[in-house]
Amino acid sequence: MNTPVGSEKRKLKIKDLWNLSLTNSLDFVSGMSAMVDIPQVERALVTGGAGFIGSHLVDRLLADQTEVVVLDSLASGRLENLATWNKHSSLQFIKADLRDLAKLPKAAINCETVFHLAANPDVQSSSCDPGAHYANNLVATFNLLEAIRKAGGVKTLVFTSTSTVYGDAVEIPTSEDYSPLLPVSIYGACKLASEALIVSYAYNYGFNALICRLANVIGSRSQHGIVHDFIDKLRKNPKRLEILGDGTQTKSYLHVADCVEAILTGIKRLSERVGMYNVGSEDQANVKQIANIVCDEMGLKNVEYCFTGGVDGGRGWKGDVKIMLLRVEKLKKLGWEPKLNSCGAIRKTVKELLYEGS
Image (cartoon, rainbow, N blue to C red; front, side, top):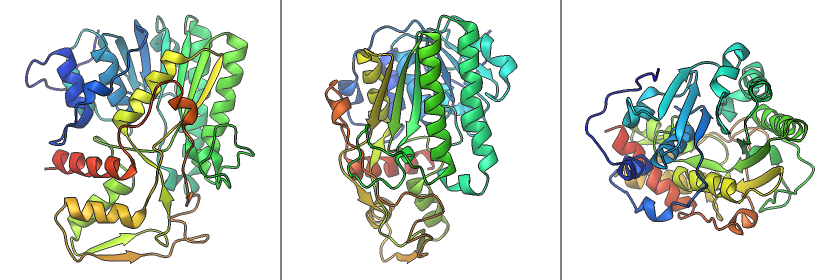
């Protein structure tokens, strides 16, 4: 029996639902033209499917007429992210925690593709509570792999990893074959360990794996991160903005719609036992640029920027990677490229979050 996931205000066509999910804002930009054709996945399990990136992926899969099983503990995910698909016959929601191994094999039964997005995504908190990241990221991944092994029938596992596995890379932009991998955050370490487990399980138990190392993904429905935090701070005090670090942090930002298309492009072209791809924009933005965009979209002028100075050489927090840019040529060779650059993704995200909070 499908679990209701919210209230449906009006009937929408399948493709219209995907269009709606792309932005939930007034700044919709022809997302349908960016969609890639993917091989038909009959039934997929999406862990963390009520979360930020996961719910956008669910939108895309359901729009493509895939049966989707969402497994989410709702620790950070929200049922309203799936409300568009309320009572849809192709969506099944299971409230469960990946740390509870007993419930997982049933969820994976008859799912040929598994998208593993469930995680504790808060990099900043990982140094304060490493045990939570170990349990929610690494133990959860091991339990899912055990469920896949026991269920049988899974052909492909897709894992959303992170650019933080590279740590303070000396090669910028950073390619997939960069080494050594020396993550400086507990979050990045747990993701890297999860990658290793996935690779070994894929080779031992006969399924394919796609590992996507994501840059900073932003967009509608996001509940944390620099754009969300700046908006929240400026709503509380529109005259002053505290900015963590020394102001020189410079990173790549990718809109969630581009992220979803990258994941599906990787599945379409996966031709090896394990595929490893960087996913990000091809440029960067620094924290002051982000602050300027947020203030501009909020109509704020003469805001005082107060930099905290940071830790460990100006990092925003322990484990923060100050400079990040991924080399994405490998994925571009498969036919994908981001539609928005970093500043474009940031501006679009601000519009979306302001619209959602209005």
